[in-house]
Structure formats: structure tokens, C-alpha cells
Image (cartoon, rainbow, N blue to C red; front, side, top):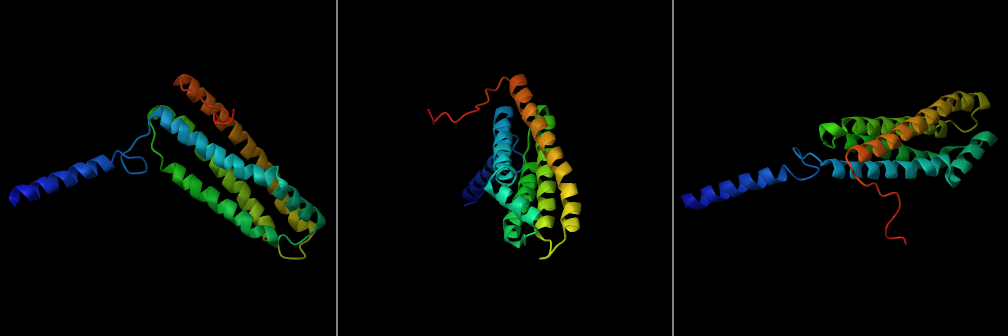
Length: 182
């Protein structure tokens, strides 16, 4: 019985040690190629959401509603969700472990996510304007939105450049298109 107990104890310790080396658990450090893959995946996810609100039909409808002085409450839930997702994504990315060579790239991703989060926070503020808001009220918020979008665009470009530079320095081939679509 004593031998079985010791064996189970040793197996439990070995299992816990093994779990410490699995992604998304403490102690795991992504290899550079795997970290770059995670970084790009987060970037792609972020860009998809941003494009929906900056270049897509929702953006057009949102900006037309602002220009016409329409009630913006119909956008509130979707914008709050986009903002919440940006906050959660940044928190998740902050927990990604990486090698020291990826520290700069990691910081660029966090900065970009913060910019996206800030932009959506301002858009949520617009959507929370009360019905019958004045042009002056929306103009004050829009004045904050434009530089936030410019900062976000700059940060996203810096992230893209950092991803390319990291891939080159680490001799990692970045896939820029879906290989399954040929």
C-alpha cells in the first residue's frame, strides 16, 4: 500500500509538472514561431472587429446617424460588446508568455490593443448620448474620436512592421494568405 501511495504521489507530481509546460498555464513560454502565430492571430481578430466599425456597413450607418442627429442607442450594445472584447483580448494577451526576443513585439501588440480599446470606449460614449443630443455634444466626442483612430492606425502599422521584422530576424515564414484557398 505504501508503494502504491508513493507511486500515485510521484505520478501526480509528474502530471502537475507536465501541466506547467502546456500553453495557457503558468510556466509555459511560447517558442518564437508559436508566439508570432499567436500575435498575428490576435492582430487579425482585432483588425476584423475594427474594420467592421471603421470601414464596414455598421460604420457607415453609425456615422450617418451621428451626422443626422439620430438616436444612437441602437448601436450601443454592439459597441459595448466590441469594447468589452477588446478589453478581454488585451487582458488575455497580457498573460501570453514569450521569450525575451519577442518582448518588443509583445509590447506593440498590447499597445495596439489598448488603442483599439480606447477607440471603442469613445464610440460607446457616442452611442450613450441621450436621445435629442445636440450637434455640439456629438462634436466634442467626435473631436476625441478622430485622434484616437489616427493613433490606433499608427499603432496597428507599427505592430504590422514589428511582426514582419520579428519574422525576418527569427527566419519565420509569415503566411499572408490562406493556403487552403487556391
